[in-house]
Image (cartoon, rainbow, N blue to C red; front, side):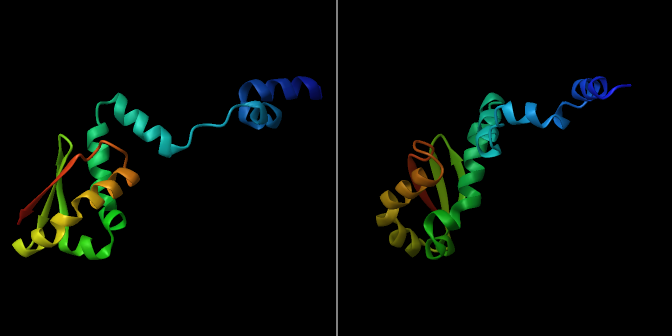
Length: 120
């Protein structure tokens, strides 16, 4: 087998070995863009947003607020926060607009439209 035939066979059977073709191929989308697209296609985008809010809560609102509250559920754009004592509701309620802004900046606008505080 001569060198050019060998190169052609390898290109057909192992396209990833051809560095010229790989350089001309468009780059794949990063996962942080693909996952939301796949979840939306599967009808699971609401669950993805809920998981993001629940998981990122300390980074979104900071350690102090995260210690006073726990995101419990996200349904129809309403985030239910649980607190241990009714006084915490009075403490956190004035910060609700800022919390909504921080959530929108981190997870996306319109995902959380309201916050409901509950003791529990």
